[in-house]
Image (cartoon, rainbow, N blue to C red; front, side, top):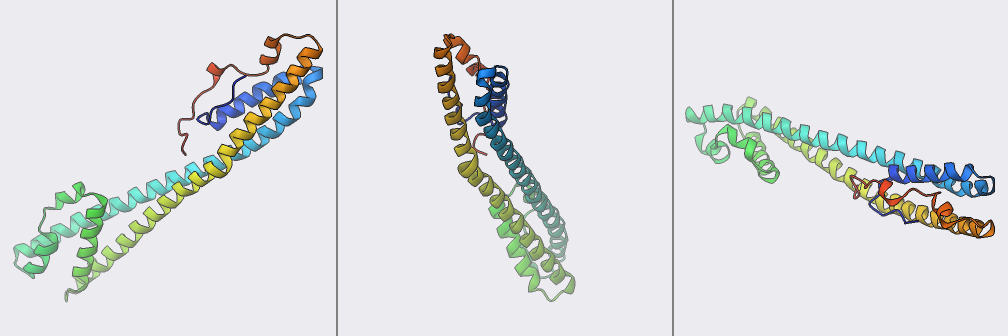
Amino acid sequence: MRDLAPAIALLTVAEDLVYTEARLFAWTDTKPLAVSITNLLTQVDAAQAAHVGHLRSIARADASAAGARAEVELFCGDLQKKLLALVAQDRQAPLFRTYFAEAASTIQTMDEASLRTWLDGAATALAASADKDLKAQGVIAKNLLAKWNEAERAQAAAGTANSQHDASARQPLREAVNAGRRDVHADLTKLGTKHKRSKRWVESFFRSARASKPDPNPAA
């Protein structure tokens, strides 16, 4: 019998345990050994449910962050067009050339740090404008920036929570499962010796190594 590697997904761990549990129940003298496997399965089920919850949180946080950036890009693109029109009329041109001289299409190619810096500068410049409409645009810009920052903080927090769960629950559980399976293997070996059963009989309670599947997201 081989240990289940750290990269093995919890679902595959459960499949291995179910395989062993079923075979232990099939023999009268091995049924008592099934209790420890059943207990491990309960723990794996709980850990898997928690893991799925973390994955959902990550997916939602990723979507929120992407949506917040898309809102920023849309707002900035529209804002640039309005302000470039003002520059063309030479209205407060020095101020707007400082922040909005680039074509609106360049917003789409900015990395996050550049876009955040651009938006923050734009919001500050707009807030200082005497024009009420432009000042209102500055408020919108500040709110969008705050929303984007909050979405990214939530995104980071979701990833951290999942990593912490992996370290505090999933990895120790895999170790407990391997220890439990080794104990059952040892007990089966004793029974096999007592009843003159072959080593193949002992190994038949565990799935072969080639039946296990790697975790598609081992670090999650």
